[in-house]
Image (cartoon, rainbow, N blue to C red; front, side, top):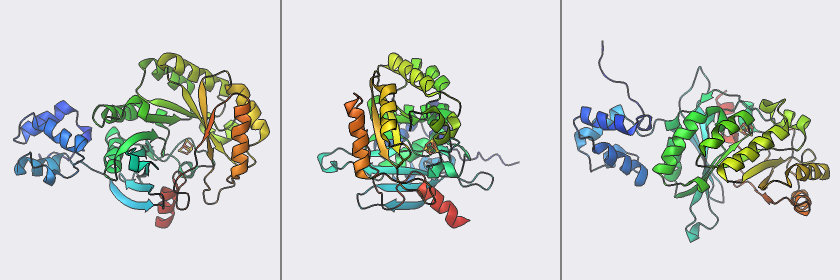
Length: 354
Ligand code: SF4
C-alpha cells in the first residue's frame, strides 16, 4: 500500500497544521508563516518564486499543499476593464464545477480606489430565481472555504482589491460555515475590514437570527426584489411561503445586534417589478426602517422572459421611493455588452460543452 499523502490545498490547512507539515517536510515551523505571508501579503502564487524557502521544501510543498487547485477555463474582459473569470474546481458526478469571479476596477482607479471583487459561494444555486442565469443550472455543490479564498487570490492577481461583494453564484447563508471561514482569512490576512465586505442573501430569517448575535464581520444585503409576498414566491422560489415581513423583522434584528444598516437589493424587471404600485408598497414596508434600497436594472439573460427597464423607468422608481422617504441608489451592471449578467459565462460554457 502506498504511503504517499494525497495533496491537500494550502488553504485547507489550519496554520498549526501547516507548521506541522513544514516540519514533516524538513523545514521549520516558522516557514508556515513565511509561506502564508508570501501568498497573502505579497500575492505570490507560485512556490518557485518563494526564495525565502529552500528549494527542497518548496518542491515538497508544491506537491503536498498546492496553492491553487482550480483552473481558469474562461475569461472575459469588457471595455470598462471588468474581468469575469470562470474557474473550474472539478466536476461532480458529471456536472461542471465551474464558478464565476468578477473583478470590477473602480472608475476612480487612478485615484487608488482599487477594485471590487465579486465571489461565488456555491457551484450553481438552489434558489433558482427565474431571472438569473446561475439559477438555471441548479445546485451542484457547496464551495469549500479554500475555494472561496482562491477566488480572492486569483482576483487580486488581476489588480488591487479594495472591496468585496459575496454576490456571485450561490446563496451564502446555505454554505455559511465555509463562507465564514473564508471571510476570516479575507479579514485577517487580506486586510478587508467589515465595512469592505458585503454578503448578499435572499434572507432566510432563521439563519439571520442565528448569526446576527455573533456580529459577523460583514455588511448585509438582502435580495428582496418585490414588496408583494405572492410575487416574491415566484421570483425567489427558495423563499416560497416565507412572508416578507418575517424577512424584514429578521433584518431589523440584524441591525439591533450589529448596528449595521441593511441594504435591500431590488432587481428592476420591466413591467414586472418597476411599477408605481411596487414603489408605493415597497416604501410602505421600508420607510420606517434605517436602510438603503439598491435598484438593479435587469441585465438580459439569453432566453429570458424578462426585459431591462428604460433609464426613465429606473429614474421614476428611484424618485417615487425618494418622495416616500426611502433612499435608493441605482447599480447599473458593469460589462453589459458581454456576459455581464450573473452566471452567464458559466451557462455559456456549459452550453458549449453540451
Ligand atoms: S439571483 Fe442569486 S439567489 Fe437567485 S438564483 Fe441567482 S445566484 Fe441564486
